[in-house]
Structure formats: C-alpha cells, structure tokens
Amino acid sequence: MPRKALITGSATMKHRDYPVAEPEIGTKELENVVEAVRTGWISSRGRFVGEFEDSFAKYIGSRHAIATSSGTGALHLALTALDIGLGDEVIVPDLTYAGTANAVIRTGARPVLVDIDPSYWCMDTARIEEAITPRTKAIIPVHLYGHPCYMSAIMEIAQRQGLYVVEDCAEAHGAQFERRKVGSFGHIACFSFYANKVITTGEGGMCLTNDEPISDKMRILRDNGTSLKKRYWHELVGLNYRMTNLQAAIGVAQLKKIDGLVEKKRQIAKVYAEEMPPVQGIVLHPEMPWARCVYWLYSILVDETKLHTTRDLLAQKLGEWHIETRSLFYPLHEMPPYQEYASSVYRASSIISRQGLSLPSSTRLGKEDVAFIAQKIRENLIK
Image (cartoon, rainbow, N blue to C red; front, side, top):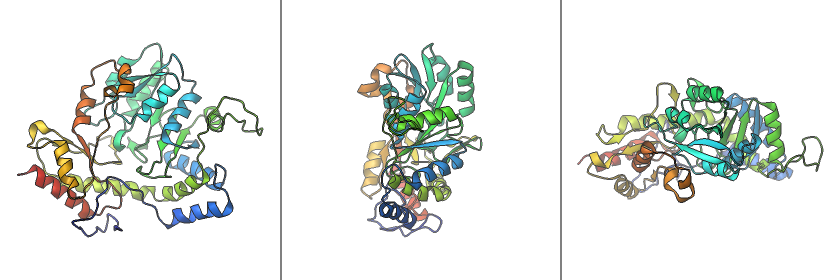
C-alpha cells in the first residue's frame, strides 16, 4: 500500500509489509520511459544515456562516466581496461557481495582476500600492505552497506606501491569520506543501479574516471571493441556491457531526487538509533567521525552470547509482523568458489557476517514505521 514520506510519517498498520528495500519510482520515471518508447530509442542509443552519464559524473565529481548493464559488468569492464589479467593479483575485502570477486576472477586474475575493520565493516587498511606481492596490480575498496572505506590511507598505499584503485561504490551513492563523495578517489569507480540500490535503473551500472584515455578505452570495450570514430571497425576484443536508453531514462529521473533519497536513508538511521534499546549485545550500524554513511541497508549486530535470543530467531519473530530482514553477506572465504583464495584468518568478517542483520530501509517507510520496527525488536530483546 502507498506510504507517506519519512518526514511526515505514516500510519502504522499491524498487517502491512515493511520491506528491506524497494525502488521509489514516480511519474517522471514513467514519463521518461514513455518518451523513449514513443521515439523508438529503446536500445543503447538515445538521449537519456548520455544525459545520465554526464549528470552522474557531475554529481560524484568525476570527468568521465561510462554507463553499463550492471554493477558487476562495470567492475569487469574497469579491470579489463586496466589490463588486469592472468598472473595478476587484486586485493578485495573478504566481506563483500560476490560480484566483486567474480569480476576479478573473470579477468583471469586472482583475488587476494583481506579482513575488514570491525569498527566500520570495510576493508582493514592495516591488512592491505600485508597482502601486497610483486604480482599485486590493484586494490578494490568496497564501501560496504553505504559506509565509506578509509580512502586517504588506501590511496597513499596505492600511490606508494604503484597500484590501481578501483572503488566499488555499488552500495554507497552519495556517501562521503572527509566531505568528498566516494567514487571520486580511485583511478576508476564502479556503481550499481540494481532495484534495491539508493537510485535504480532496474539493472545497470556506471564506471567513472578522470583519465580520458581510460575512459575512451572503456567505451570501446563496452561496445564490443568498436572504434569510437569508425563504424563496424573493431579495435579491441570487447564486451557488450551497454546500458539501454530505457534504463537510463529511469536513471535520469532518479538522479534528480538522489539528495532527498540519501537524506531519507539517514533519517531512517537516526530514528533506529534513537528508538533501538541500549542493550548489551546489540551494535548499531556504524558511522565513523570522518564518514557520511548513506545506510544502504540499515544493519545491526546481534551477539547471541550476550542475549537470550539469536539473530535468526529475532529475524523469525520480526517476520511474523511482516518485518523483512536479511542476514549480511557471507564472507568470501567461506564459500566454495573462493576458498582457494583465502590466505589468512578472517576473524572480523566472520563475526560481522554471523551477527549482522539488515532491517527495513526503504525510503518509503515513515518515521512511525521505523519506530514500530524498533519497538518489535525491543519486545524480543527485553523480557
């Protein structure tokens, strides 16, 4: 059923649904899509693709943007453009969505897994230098669940060691490190516009860079290696990672309201922080002093050793009230395709993954909705 904006609140109903995430699609998105359909520009050419690229680059603070068919495709495209391949190593966090590692593996390179910092759940900068070998070619910091990585340290290490930095910003549109948007630090930054992201195009992604030759190369690779100047002339063995004009039509409309969506995410986080019980064993979603988190999915840690319940039992009880929750990602080193890349003890990623629970974070939730969810959590923790 329709929900009011967070600022005004909405009526709490016992049998309504409280989703973890959902797209906020309005009339402008529909108008743009209708325009694309009526004009016949429904594939990868059309005015919305270029407009979305230019507008998103300006929003983040980069010179060049290359729209893609998915966030994972954006990562693969970026690594391919940097000539990363067989024999190379790329440092990635152990706690991330599998697409980060998949993109590395599909280039022929080897992902090197490092543990996360338990205080803010992103790549532990102290572990990066330990993982560097003569074969290391790049670092992929992942701004996990909307919280920025500590980018100044990562960029310093990369510069000193001569490594590329490819930011994985799939979950962090608008997040900031020291008042600068993530996606503006690395040699290339990659975003996802999947339906549950801060803004969406249904499926889709974006590569950003300030390097014009790299930008041109990604455009060529994205379009099956086709020359930018000569039709049907192929300069490289490429890929088809093009975004459609239909997707970009939605993205153009979504981008116009991104500041409001980010603010709603932050307001949801604020209400959770105010309403959640100060119980030993519950850790709220972090935000470091140097960070501006966008709380893609507001998540908590449930330490069952200090509580009378478990994370999974709490999730089950919340589900009885139509409150959707999700566990955090599994650590890469625990899953069969990636076990061979484990080279250390991943204590923090294992604990955070095992204890983590994502709560409803839809921007359509009202203040009273979030307070109701917090109330149900309190009822199951304080007995």
